[in-house]
Amino acid sequence: MASPAGRFGSFTFDRLVVALVFLTIALACGLTPMHTDSWWQLRAGRDMWQAHRVLLTDLYSHTAYGAPWLNHEWLAEVAYYAMFRIGGLPLVTLLATSLIVGAWALSWRLGKGTVGERAIWIGLSVISSSFWWQPRPHAFSLLFIVTTVTLIVKWRVWWLPLVFLAWANCHGGVLLGFVFLGAGLGAQTLLAPQKLRTSIAVVLACLVATTMTPLGLSFWVEIPKSLARIRLYPFDEWRRPTLTAPALLPFWLIAAAFCYGLFRQLRRLQRLTPDEATLYACGLAMLPLAISAIRNVGPFLMVAAPAMTTLLPLRSASARAPRHERPLVNAAIVAIATAGVVVTLAWAYANRIAKLRWDPIPEGAITALRQCPDNLYNRYDQGGYLLWFVPERKVYLDGRQDPYPPPLILDQIRLENGGGAYEVFSRFGIRCAYLPTVSPTVPQLEQAGWTVTYRDADWVVFTH
Image 1: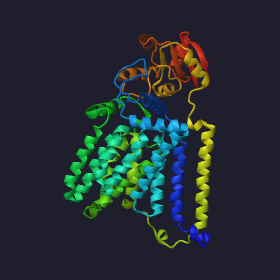
Image 2: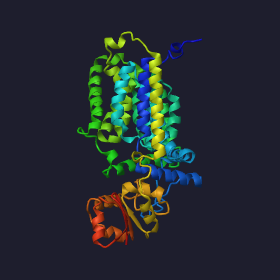
Image 3: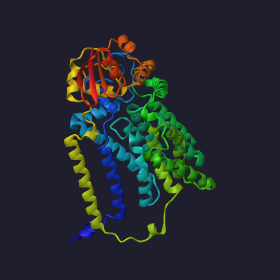
Image 4: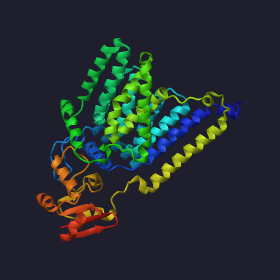
């Protein structure tokens, strides 16, 4: 009979480190709060599931009802709703968790250094990239980004059109895929010119794949327009990363180290391996986008972290020294840590802890909203809640910026910065308002004699 040490001999210290890194990522993802957009995406997924068709016009607002809606995320919305039908909000959250953990697992495998080196670079990276780990279609993009880079590095490029086909139906972030495609295939072709024909054919096939969506050829016209409109609005995820935000310090550190490492590599350009060249090119192409918008920080770090293991290796004599392994201890630690993560998530989900934001609207506010007259006014960033929790009411705005003309969204931003609400309310026949108590519109409505039908420390419902 094998001894306990023999049965657990595979639990080396290195494997313990890997397990702890990914258990930490899984726990952080599993406790990530629901985003306001997650709710309207669940609503759209439910409606498409029931109607057996893709929604391409607005059905949810009284301000843009019937307007075209570029629903380029339809497949992800249906996938999240399918998880909701099977296991409720826990399974919705765990789907996003599996996508993000899978993305970081591929990123880990792209690294070439020791386990300790990869743990350092990945550990620093997840600190700054964890802002956008909510259950949203963006999680699909994170997985597809690293999948694209991995297929280029391994030169299994004929799988890429299938990746881009799924990606284009899950999230508009597929446009980022072409940044990685151009940089990665370009680097490979520079090192091996005989790959040029294959690279051109793969790019063309990926272009065709992105048109195989409900948007068809208009995808390449409307999605860039959508991205241009987003830049008009002061949304958090599109703001520039700042040097003073503590959580972003690892990003700036890695970005600086990445640039320094590339400068050092200039002397050995002719000796770069294809996988090194691919990672360096993809990271360099993504860096300006990461500096311009905080939502691009994660995609950059997922490529930069494995690149850093060869750009600035951290190997030391102690890292190469023989280590006395304690497999039983390592296995026990992994078992305890795994049980801790499972129990923590199960307890958090069973108790619907506030951090998860699974109950963003109080029951009293929902009751008041169901009783107040049309039309409703709400802020852009709360519309998603209303679409899920008060589905019978049409909203003023929600997180789907595509159906709404820019002046409408800009007017709402002006109102919530203290602008007068009367002209807008009159134009749309608004007789009900759902607002956070800190909104500058609240004292305006109080002074105008609107009736408060619900109020707590955070929310207020007015009727008129």
